[in-house]
View 1 (cartoon, one colour):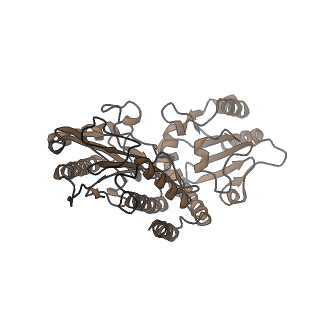
View 2: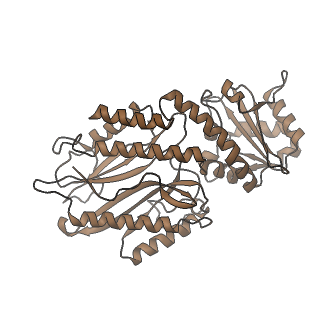
View 3: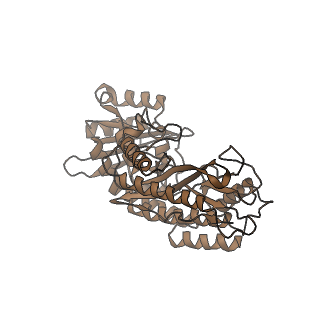
Length: 428
């Protein structure tokens, strides 16, 4: 059963160009070209930047550099510089590389460094020739992945371009957030497949094919999930985490436990590619049947139904131009008006797991979020629709029970699930 499941997932990935590794590398180049053609011009125009300079040093890489390098250049070499210039009249983007780069990079970037120039001389010359009004660099007080410019490279750049152009250097957060947040058409299709494969892993590990009540532990499931992800040539960006709730325990997430009949099982799992920089993130729940039971207690299914209703509400409130804080406030109010007891902590997803864009609540802060929560919702963005609902279960003597749920969605005009969502509790 295990080998058959792995083989089916490989076939699904292979059909989408996401497996084996060579196919994933080729797809990553197509995605990069599409992003540079479709997303970067929009991001530069919307942010009001006519030049973007991305600098990175070997062994001290800017996180964003990996979204701009090709698969055959996994890290910076000595000092790597990329320069992007937007022509205000035509909107065309000139893409330039300074420093050592790979064969695949040469098919995308123009090598502008002359033979006798240092990287700093070449960068300074290009800046002077193009005379940009605003030069974006990767500095940000809010987002770590937008803050990858080291202090030494920042000083090097200012010194190289001279006083006039140093005065035009700006923190590029508005540009970099948009670059990271938006997904291209190829990425959206890849996300659908990666989400489906993540579901397949949950379906196998949360089934009687793997779980043997009284023997299997939550930790056993975690390691099986990791092994399955690794067998596909992918990575996991957290966990995977598996826990349970049990009648008589005040702990709502019990880890490292032997799974017993009557338990409510929960997982949090996400995978990411090696060359295709996309992440999944989801949470599902299962009930361990007791002897003689053919289904989960009705109260638990009702709680899942309330969670799904809450998901509908959030998706309805996810409107372009509305801030993350407003989506949070309106969604929680509507849920409470329907007698749902909610918590909401949804985040953008894609290039990074906890991605760029508006945060919609946080697990540890169910209220107004300065900064992250004040960003507006923008189109063509994927989210991990992460939340929970809770109630007092009569069948567990009034004990508070949580239904932790998370599913990957995309706002692309309408808001839609990338690969469906859990509607019934899985039964083991």
